[in-house]
Image (tube, rainbow, N blue to C red; front, side, top):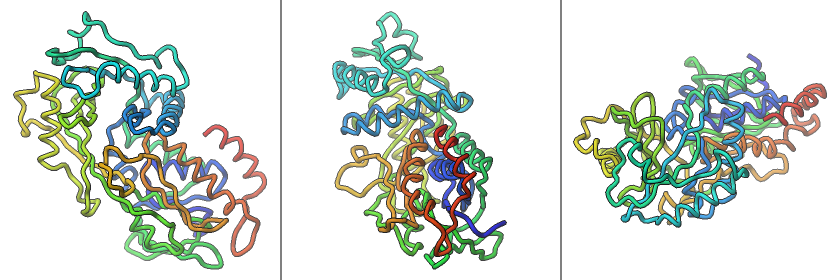
Length: 402
């Protein structure tokens, strides 16, 4: 394997996969370094949804919602074998914190931001005559039920697909490979890593840190380091129950007002997610009994047929980690925009990517390509190598199709 690359991407979750795909499609020599396996952490432990983030409207994150809705539309068209449109149902009760008029207003804005105010982008209130068909949904004090459409995916399969696309465009994957450190030299970034029990070295013109919950640790091993703000890991847990509620997703309100999804998954029902601060080793994150009880109570609140279930009836559970800015706000209310930080240089060498949504991985990748353009398109010097003209010509066409 050549030890000279344009870009090293650390991490093969969805953000690293997307960055590698976009950079490779742009004609750059890319290598991905992954310590465990493709989609081995958060990118296989999400809510499995491709969506705009309806609840982010409450915190005013309109640009994020619009971006995710645009990306959702592209994924539905271009990856139909991995992303499918699914009906979502929002029941509104007398005890709900959000009355019907507020839900209707939010859905109206959601449809408007999607850019298409017709067909399946529209929402509707279900007539009472159809409430009996909603998988045994509790009808006591039920005021309204709204239906709209978003999408569902297999997050791990999507991530693998994007990595395969990057490899098809020339990227290389080192897995398993543990990052040891990186230092800027006259020939670019010298990177040390361990693979097959041995210490190896490669040289790259730039490094993109997409190591998810390890982003701060990886950044600390880079010289120069990207100026990351204080970050916090937030765990989100899911449980899986041995019953089917049909091919529809319910968007319900938990006892504390948080949004929880109740959705079909592998012939069973997946329920999530929670949000709690996490300070341990990312490898050890797991649902707590309190989280499992919270999610089970949420399901039982809306589906009477589950009220005899106990914790022992949970057939599977998992937890993933979000990387959020450290603020006094509760995790539920914090901004979810992807943070891309780079060293203070007109031609940045180290980028660190914190957070990011499964749905908007392509948008994040485009920003990474833009930030690295001054570095990667610089003329030869200090060990830099400029892509060949025929590579750049081919790239432009590929970039337009991303």
